[in-house]
Image (cartoon, rainbow, N blue to C red; front, side, top):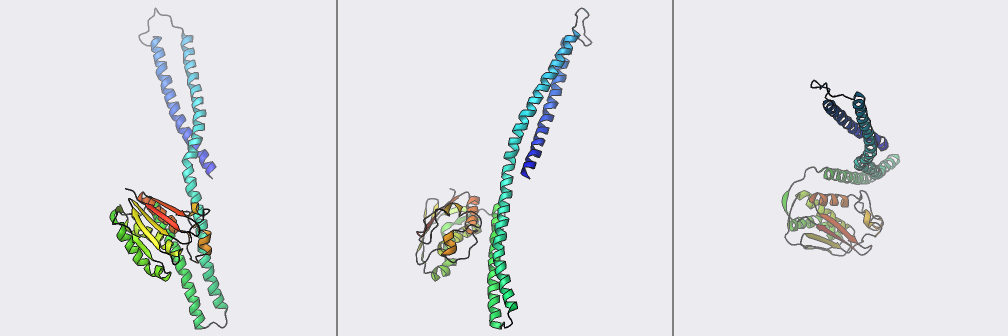
Amino acid sequence: MFKRARLQLTLWYVLIIMLVSLFFSVAIYGLISIEIDRFANRGPMRRPDIEIDVEFISESKNHLLLQLLYQNIVILVVSGSLSYFLAGITLKPIAKIIEEQKIFISDASHELRTPLTALKSTFEVALRSPKLNIAEAKNNLKIGIKEVDKLTNLTNSMLRLSHLENGNGQQHLSINIKETIDKVIARLSAKASSKKIKIINKTKNYFIVGDPSSIEELFEIIIDNAIKYSDNQPIKIYSTNNKIIIKDSGLGISQKDLPHIFDRFYRADNARTKSGEGGYGLGLPIAKKIMDKQGGKIIVDSISDNGTTVQLIFRK
């Protein structure tokens, strides 16, 4: 598809360049012909005592025409090559976006299929059971609701990622980072307590300008991940200059998985097998998009089975 589009774009480039070139060639030929005629005094001021070599004048015009034709052929060849090259550069980001969309649709379809299959299997087994009682029916409904919640979380994350990529609904307000982190910790305290995890927040009062809900979501993703993949170990949060550091001593991320943690739907092997947590691999991509919108950076350093350190570097 893109090969054909590239050729079509190349033809349009060449057509525009050649139309401009031919326009100037005709204009140049006309102006120089007028000057030749004027020099030869063939106009109304022609002097009878000067002999005009008509053949020489005609040859000069023909030579000029051939030179312009040669120049246009050179322009055609050069512009054709350059146009094909530029068309490739022009279409490259579009091809990349479409390829990413294909991957996203494929991955999303796979992730949606899993809970839908589980939901369908649960209900089919229940319907085929001749001795289904109320207790079993309620249990099946609970399983079904759990799978529906998974689908809801997945679709919400996908929509959120799409909104961030499109830059929708962003505000620019003053945000106190310490207060935002305290609010997130309070919301996640029950989850942390259930895993006997203590969250130590030593962040100083630090203000940035950004979208409050996005920044709150950013810290919730990072701190929730730290809780999710830790157990009986404290999580430390502190600040230095324009940097917020969140450090845990949990599962960590292997060097093999580390380069891919910001890829959509990517989940590290140890996150799948050891934690038992049902994520979809969209949290960190959302966090990175939020930091990109903020004009900052997110850096993750980790060693498998030895914890993870996340640095959030905000724009000064």
